[in-house]
Image 1: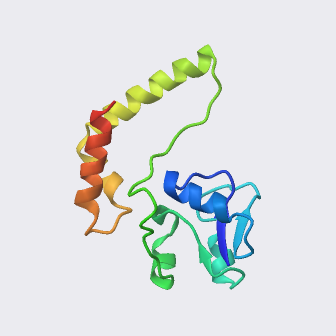
Image 2: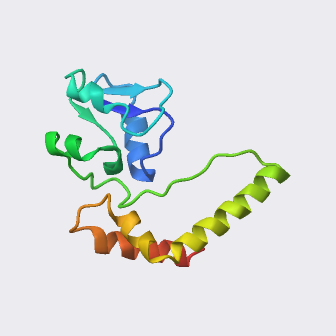
Length: 138
C-alpha cells in the first residue's frame, strides 16, 4: 500500500497519476492535518504501509540510513515551495518584506550550501543549475 498526503502537490505528472489511482485500494491518501513533512514515515516504519511518497528533505539522517528511497521519473526533478496567504494590504506588505529578505539571503555565500545540503552530493550541481534557471525567471 502506498500512502500520500492529501492536498499536497507532487508535480503535474505525479498529481495526475495519483488522481487516476486515488480510488484504488493500494493507494491510501492521508487526510489528517499534517504538521510537517515526513509525518507519514512512522506508518512505513511500523509496517502499516509499504511505500510513502515523500520529499527527500523530510527524512532525517537516521531515517535515510534505515530506509530505501527511489526517485520517481514522473515527478518534477525539484519541487518549489509556495506560501499560502490572505490577499490583503497587510499580507502584501509582508510578502514584499519576505521577498526582499529572501533576495538578500540568496546573495550570501552560505545560501548555496544551505540549499544543497539536503540533496545527494552527486545531484547538487544539477539542483544548483535548476535553481539558477528558476531564479533568473523572476
